[in-house]
Length: 447
Image 1 (spheres, rainbow, N blue to C red):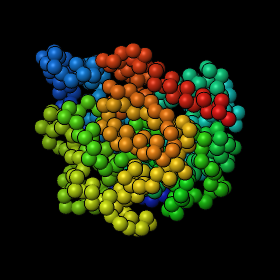
Image 2 (cartoon, rainbow, N blue to C red):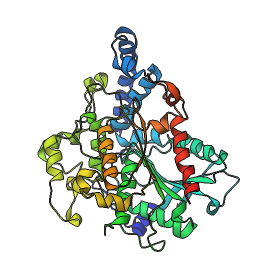
Image 3 (cartoon, rainbow, N blue to C red):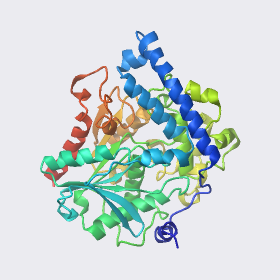
Image 4 (cartoon, rainbow, N blue to C red):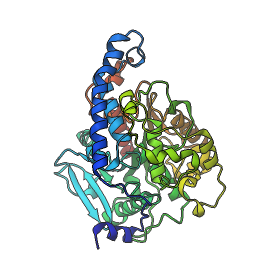
């Protein structure tokens, strides 16, 4: 039996109805569409940074550098507008380091990021249990690995014994909900019951889709979903001591104004992340009539490539209201109906019970939520943070008004990414990561 089938048997993962294949057509698409985008970037930069510089929002409102804007366009294209098999390897690319050690234990696949001279993880004072983002369909952990290593070195230089346990959960559409939460539970039980790290030393964290999984997992620990079970690794541990949510994809289907800006300034767009959400619940090939066009995403239209249009449309408001209004028992929901499940879509509209947030998320400043004011999730995250306040969680906040999605990670590793019109200390590349290090170090003092 292959390792994938063996892991599936051990963890009872759920295979999706559609497995993307690497074909001649998918390779041709990424070559042609990426060539078109690379040709478009110089014209886009000339237009905004030369011809209309005096009134371009990129220059006058954000103060974004041309280098960073070019990176935004290219990453948004590869991440959201290309077929998965040929584009995934770009985001899996990691950087070799003595600080990284791979783990494969009975279906739990992860990386330890820690000082190579200190191999005993039970000596750690804080362990960050990390779930990367990627819209549920990409593993972008490799791309962000430099930031993880930088954070680990930053804390260890402060004499905080710190490591990161980065879970490589399986991706949609090959594996769909609740597979990723089953893997999260297995990894958490492995950390506590097998490795021997107490819950009081664990901070669970994630960015984007990973932060969605973290929030949903904490809701599960508070009020378990019977579909999320792992028989191995002993009893289910108690809640971790703290939580870190970076640019959480907290609302999978939304009509908030920030989701469809007049000018796309974020590194992601609403149509692309909606397609990832549909893949996560296994709904990309079982759609209602008003979403039939999604079967043809990503686009083969050269005009879309040259114009920089989103490859997929945002979810229609009528569709959003319909799926959130479905009244079914939790165990009977499937496909797009799962957008009405708190374990899939853990935002205030769906959770609809503030006491559940109070039970699930660490309180008194031990939950840190970070976001950028220019990201498409901004309105949804603000509503989520306000709900946490009303619930009595009292989260800590880390906001950069002119920044885009996942800025807290990318500012530290992408040249010029931290600079914007506001300047000041927030323009330092390590400012955001330093604030996160402060938050994690405070966990040691609070014990």
